[in-house]
Length: 416
Image (cartoon, rainbow, N blue to C red; front, side, top):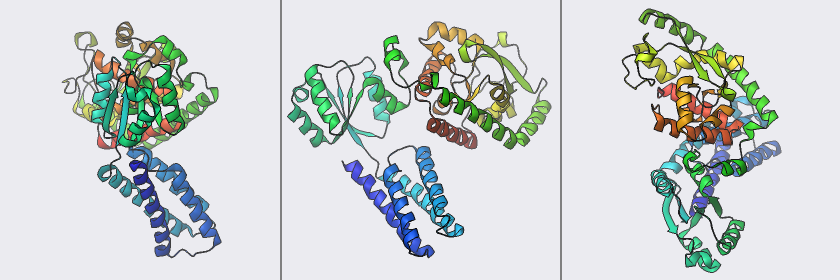
């Protein structure tokens, strides 16, 4: 309840600042202007730009609303004034979001019911997250759960915002929780709760029945969504290819001057439907025999050239993969294309690993922007959890979010 009041207060200030700014910029007060003002106020209320703790998501929502506002103001307000008004509004919203998220940070109290083998890992993640204040752990036979009045009192007294059911529950508990859910309380099972916190699917807890009955995975069967994704692949690849052409030409020259060997690195990777294809990248290592060295590239690997290190951090070495996207072997966004030799090892060691080959690999992806570079089986398991999350929740909004996170990685050189 307190969290909602805080967000409502910031939304009110948002609208108030908009109204004051109109007066400062000297925008005339007539019916058309008031209609635009009411429309923008409604958008702020409906889309609630402060609900998320993700700065990229908030900036996208705020930017989209302000661009739309400029568009609908076209015949009402002079373009220069509209751009000034909504440009300042965007900056104000980013500043107020920073203040809200850092000084008025929203905290949740949550109830965890029952036990689960990964409960310890879940509690660690919740401890690292800044979303949770108090975690109330309860057994399935707890008296508060069996009595609706006691449970309702606990929820209001502790200001509980979410309930997560970690294990199977009795009929009496289900009835009580359903009543609370109908009154607006969020109730999750273990898998949903885990995914919401970390943006990954707990692979170790998965089974075939869960995958069969689970929601999501539209990327498998939604033909229209596949066509949209393919169209975006081609458009984005052409745009990125044109924009980065000078960088690619310069990289080719530096690679050739810095060390002996070809400019491009070509390797067999596993793609869609477990089929092999040849991936093309800029060579970032000195020439060496793959059989005499580790399959993994270490962070301070002596084989990596000086410019190769720069390319890996800024993802420049990945740019030639645009060709793989245009030819259809890859998508712009998806799981990382894995080396065929490593892929065979992972299939033997990691359950459900082949599922990642049911979609095209990507030039960038949710795992690439969410998990640091790692080498080894355990790191692959972690990345797979992010890959499964993407495959399950793939959407245009998630793809846009990944693109912005990729840009952030490139700008700040946090790749590997």
